Image (cartoon, rainbow, N blue to C red; front, side):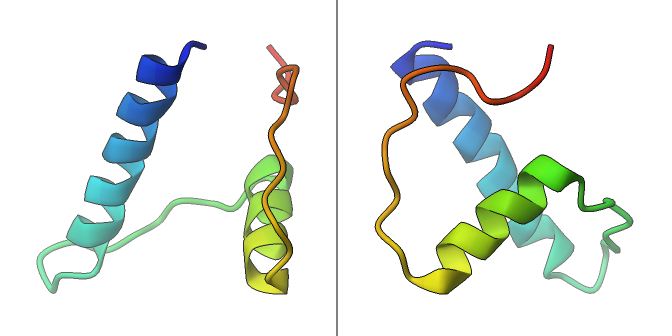
Length: 58
């Protein structure tokens, strides 16, 4: 993905999180291994490093 595509995906995720925080929406999204890795990295407070290749299986 290019930068613009990454930003669009991030925007979609941010809007989903905002909607899930309201009383009208309930989140049933499972946490997959890749998302758990990201959550753990963010929660650890570690500096987020740039990935130079895609780590998501296709």
